Length: 125
Image 1: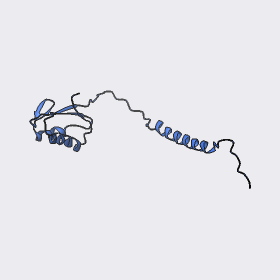
Image 2 (image 1 turned 180 degrees about the horizontal axis):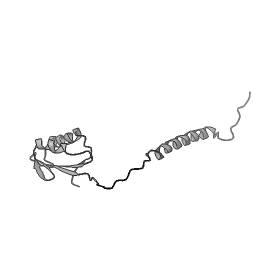
Image 3 (image 1 turned 120 degrees about the vertical axis):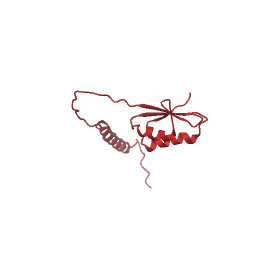
Image 4 (image 1 turned 60 degrees about the vertical axis):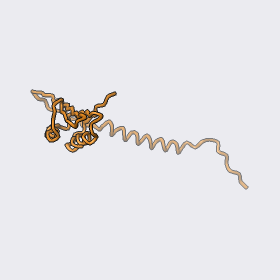
């Protein structure tokens, strides 16, 4: 009966194969990340106007009253006011802790239906 050969060392060939595959994946992904931007040269203009995004503060008090930038507003007027908000504008919602949750969800739903994603909820720390 023949005895089995005794293994004198660890076979590192499979380890090298795995490392080469991982290296190829990393190099491929890193080239996509590095080249992810489009290189363009913008034309020059004689006049410049920087458009700043506006900030809207919507407040709901405990009496179900709405305020936009500290001005009282009705629910119907709120629809019209939110229609003037662009997607770049920021909206901060402050609701009294005794205000009905339904009113808060009404405002958030109205903002989301207009495609406004920059919504912040104001809380006390």
